[in-house]
Length: 251
Image (cartoon, rainbow, N blue to C red; front, side, top):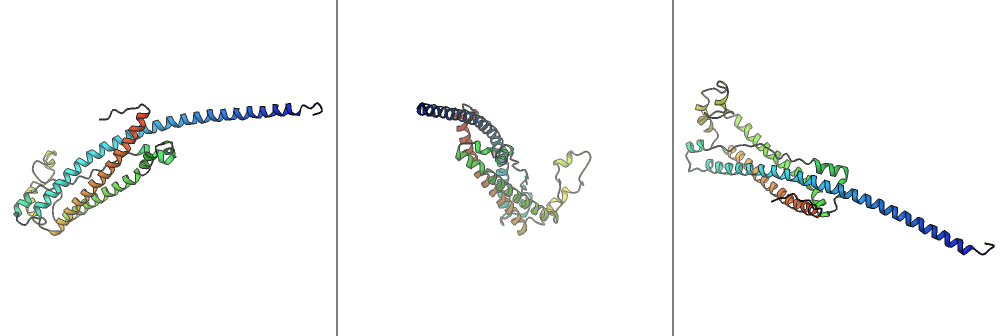
């Protein structure tokens, strides 16, 4: 100060501060770049895993829908026959009883559930995709509830039949003939017609059959909603992966 050098030292100090600030900003920029690169890699891997998982779930759902659709068609045809007063009782008795397939979707959501539980779903930058993924569990839960209601309807009908007929494999050519020896009594087949006559014109049996068909219809409609969401998710996943030059070669 005595030599009037204050301005010189002040400029030097300011220069030092600027250099420190610039160094900090560069370090932060490098750190952010590394963090963004890391998150980008995590996002890309999550997208790939989600694509694989959703493709498998869709394959299983399509297979189940084919079975359920056939089952519903059989049920409607059967109901039309047994409720038609112009059709003889003998023809109603010989009508093919619709199969009662209890298979379920069994969706695998391990990847998605992990992303949601760990909070890594935030790594996905596409807001539309993130919204659909976040709400996917609601759709799955609803479908499971519909499946359970269909199973309950079948169980209710079976409980009704147990009080009126023998439940088991009864006709020649069914699995019973393939068992070692005779697993089922030989005289069961001769009693089928008389047993079916006890319920084939029963209004309660009509209602129980119709209830199962209605539950199947609701299940198919719910599956259609899930398929619509899947198409949206698949399109967004494909778009994000394509931007990363990753192609699943889907038809």
